[in-house]
Structure formats: structure tokens, C-alpha cells
Length: 256
Length: 314
Ligand SMILES: Nc1ncnc2c1ncn2[C@@H]1O[C@H](COP(=O)(O)OP(=O)(O)OP(=O)(O)O)[C@@H](O)[C@H]1O
Ligand SMILES: Nc1ncnc2c1ncn2[C@@H]1O[C@H](COP(=O)(O)OP(=O)(O)OP(=O)(O)O)[C@@H](O)[C@H]1O
Ligand SMILES: [Mg+2]
Ligand SMILES: [Mg+2]
Image (cartoon, rainbow over all chains, first blue to last red; front, side, top):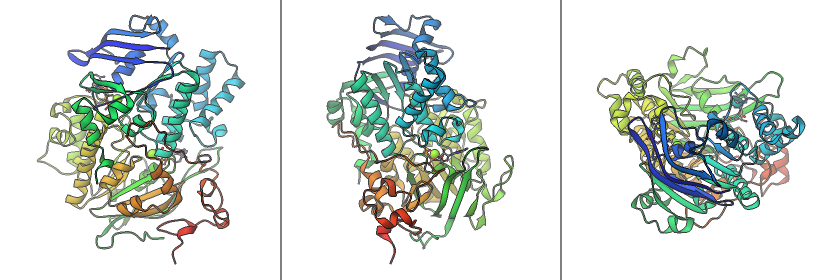
């Protein structure tokens, strides 16, 4: 399903945080979003799900297929959230309840949105945990979030987001706590879901190597605006905006 | 086992010897998260600690701070043994250690302004000349952020606030657990260098945990590679980078995605991520190792600097 953001503005009090963001997500494609820390990447994702912080005001258009998400009632949005559109939050704790086993959290979504029975939901949850490379998934499922490492919690948050087979996934820095080999596994999983099931992904990442590995389109944000958008190869090899160029030049690995 | 690659010309600040740390949960198998790890950090030295997600890096760091009970082995800091005390009390010998925790969301107090939290650090460091705004500026944030609360900040801004607070305390050992993972490339280079400069200029040690190997390469004097609770390779940064010897280190360096725009997915390690509650016998890496031999399935390579039967010291 297509998700289109156009002219999105968000203000908190008199502070303008987003100043007219345009982004387009297509089924089967990964749209990578990079940008300066504090430029508004997370706010853009939260706006799509109607989860902006208290006191924030959003204007512009966010359409999912034919439906306008910004104009939707809280009840309607609730139905879409976690079902058709899911989010991996930058702070994994936001995705999880600390007092419930991860199995409960995974299966409750599935039973609610997909109408699965207890046994089926549990089997699918174990499968998902294995897909995000959690060791010993069949026993890990009964553990609590604090019993996992930082990177494991991040992967469990991804499993929770994928639980209900969303059509659109907003993943906000989903691999920041992962070493490169486990990260490779997660990127392959996301790429596979796009290619095989037509998932549309907005992948927020500051890691241009990750961007280069999976993104089809790349956008770059600075100070509440998208300053550059284009196909992955063009943006990373021949950036037009000075900020994109500066980002590529500052990669420590490229210096001796 | 002592760390054979430790720099000898400088005094050892932190020494971790054959450390074992276990997580116990009633009714479940014991998780041996750190399974006999040895590591040292000298004064003025930056040591990068890298390894697979879940291999025990944070557990080791928390044990060094006295936050996790130790099953066996020893930790010495500034010549004194580190022993965990009750939750509310801190071992006074540890006041020279500051840790930037992996999760910047839960490590800042949500109810206090960030300026006040950085001021706490300044008091710990007995610094009467700097202001919280000065520290914010050093980590690349606007001075007027001091008056705001943590929830008003983005992920990368929070990480820099946590670093500012730790730097304010002028620690003699700074531990950063993925401290800059949410920053963009240009801010990462800036803050990583700042942390390194602190170590080099004040003689403090820096233990820098990161999955970002290019940042580790930029600032670390030595790299320690951890796999399933053990340090499997340690060496000077350029040596490990240019000539990795442990098969796990090789796989790790080989999976760094290049920002070349080519759309190539990096290679995964074959086999399953191991469970520290049920580690494989022999060498812990053998089920996933492309060059495993018979001895690897039977005996654990319990030596350094490269814990691999192909690199047994003469
Ligand atoms: N609750 C809030 N109230 C007011 N301002 C906020 C709030 N949350 C974030 N901001 C501000 O909004 C701006 C955009 O924040 P956002 O979290 O979207 O940045 P980001 O691009 O995701 O950055 P990062 O890469 O560091 O996560 C930042 O300048 C931040 O300080
Ligand atoms: N409180 C706990 N109770 C039980 N097991 C735990 C607990 N904390 C961590 N573990 C387990 O200990 C192992 C090591 O965790 P640790 O957080 O040290 O890993 P890490 O190397 O820091 O990983 P990451 O890179 O993902 O942050 C993991 O298998 C984790 O599930
Ligand atoms: Mg963010
Ligand atoms: Mg950790």
C-alpha cells in the first residue's frame, strides 16, 4: 500500500519542528531517511501513526491508499496502528511493556488484529523471534524485556512490529544496537518482506552503509525539511545537497 | 590469564581477569553472560570493545561499575578490587568511574532539567569553573538546552546529554556503552574524538563499547573482540583491522556495509546465534566457524591474544 506524506508541518508551542516534509513510500520498496540529529526524522514517523507528543500540532497531508490519516479519528487510527501500519520505535522500551513476557506482547497483537488462536499465535511468535535471530526462541518467548541485551530488545521490537503482517513499516533506527553480522540478518529479513510480500518500509537510519545495503530511495533531512531525495545510487554517489556531501565526507571509515 | 597486548609503558588503570558474571532467574537455566573474560585499560588509553549482540558487553561493563555481582574472577580499578555493594550504596573506590549507559532514554532522570543533571556531574568532578552550558556546547548542542527536560530531545540529543554529564564528572575511567549509536556520521566523528581527547589529555582510560567498527577504528588504541562471553581477540587497532586473525573477527569486519550506493546486502554469519545458557562445547565459535578442526569441537582455546587453535602461542 502507498503512503504519501505531503507538506507535513509539526509545531510544539511556537517551535516549528517540521516545516513541510514530503515523502513517498511504495509497496515493495525501502525508502531510507537519513539526516542530522534533531532534524525531525522521528517526529515524521510519529506523525504518521498519530503518536506525536502532547501539545504538538500537525498540518499537511498523510495518505494511506485513499485514506487521510491526519484527519482520522483516534478510534480509526487505533485500528490501523499495529495492523496495516506498524512502527519500530527508536527507543525500544516504547514498543514494550516491562512487566509482560515478550510472548504475551507478541501474541496479544496477533490475536487482536489477526484473530489467531492461542496456539497459532504462539507458534508464529516463536517463528518471528527466530527470524530476528533471538537464540533459543522457544524458551526466550517466556522471558521479560529486561532479561535481554540492548540489541536483543531492539530485535524483539522489530518482531512485535512485524507480528501482524503490516503493509507499511516505519522503522526508526532499528539497527543502532546491532553488530554488523546480526544487522545483516535483520536487513535481509526486511528486504525479503519487501520483495516477497510487498511491504513498504520507511527506514530511518544515520548509517549510510545500511542505507546503501537496503534502501531503494534515499531522502535526507535537515532542520525540519527534506533537503534531498533520489534513487540510492545517485544520492550516495553523487549527492546534490551540500549537507549530504558533508555526511558522506565525515564517514570515519573513509579516512585513514 | 593476563592481557598480553597491554601497553606496558603506561600504568594499568583497569584490569579484568578471568571474569565470570551470571544472570540468575528463578526456574530458568543460568545465563553465563560473561564466561571468563580478561581485559585491561591503561591510563590515557582507549580500548574498543566489539562483539555480537548479546555476547555480554554490557554485562561486563556493568560489573566493572559494581552494578552486577561477579561469580568469579577479579576486577581491579586503580589498584583496588571492585566489589559490588548494595543497590543504593556505591563503592567509594568506584567514584572515578563514569558510565554512559546503552539506553539514553532510561539513564536520564525524566523529571529534572538536563542542566541540573549535568551540574551533578560537575559537582562530582569538583569542577567550579565550567557551567552545564559549556558542557552542552562541547558535545555539539546549543547552550540554551540546559533549561529543558529530557523528553524534549531527540535520540541523538539525549545521548550527547548523557555524555556531557559523564564528562562533567572528570572520571579517571569512562565507559561508553554504545554512547553515540544514534548520532549522524558527522556528529559521531566529533563526539568520538571529544571522548578520546578527554582520555589522552587527562590520562583517563576509555572503554568504548560499539558495534560501529569504523568509529572504533577512529579512536581506539586497542580493540578487544568478544564472542559469547569471552574475549576472542585483542590487539592494536591497526593490526586487528588490517590483519584480523580470529575467524569471528574476520566475519565481523567482512560484514561492514559499504556506503557505496551499490545495494549489496552484507554477509550474515552462518548458523544460529548461540544461547549463553547452553554454550557449545570446545571452542564457542566452532559451530559457525568456516575453518573448524577436530580439536575445536573438543577443547576450548583458553589463551590469548587470539583464542583460536590456529593461533596457539608457541
Ligand atoms: N516532546 C518534544 N517537545 C518539544 N520538542 C521536541 C520534543 N521531542 C523532540 N523535540 C525536538 O524536535 C526536533 C526533532 O526531533 P526528532 O526526535 O524528530 O529528531 P530526529 O531527527 O529523530 O533526531 P535523532 O537522529 O537524534 O533521533 C528536535 O530538535 C527535538 O529537540
Ligand atoms: N537481567 C538479566 N537476566 C537474565 N539474562 C540477562 C539479563 N541481562 C542480560 N541477560 C542476558 O545476558 C546476555 C548478555 O547480555 P548483554 O546485555 O551483556 O549483551 P551485550 O553484548 O551488551 O549485547 P548488545 O550488543 O545487544 O547490547 C544475553 O544473552 C542476555 O539475554
Ligand atoms: Mg530520532
Ligand atoms: Mg549491550
